[in-house]
Image 1 (cartoon, rainbow, N blue to C red):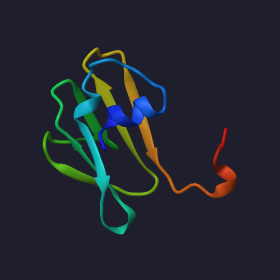
Image 2: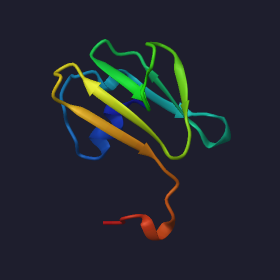
Image 3: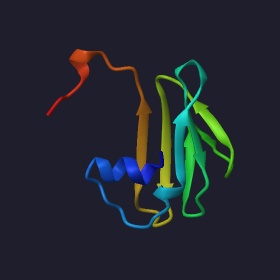
Length: 90
């Protein structure tokens, strides 16, 4: 699944800023693998810049920061294991 699909399903539309080339897929031990194939954004795991075209595991309580080419749009994704009472079901 790519980041653009996630954003559109949440009703968030940025346009063509590279989100379609940031890919997520499941990994071992409940990790989430992220791969940045975009020339239009920079992806960081903590303070580490992710190399283009390589998959990196993200584990619970880690943060991904994505900075888009417009240099004004930035997104933080926190990978957490929420308890049912912490979820907002609106």
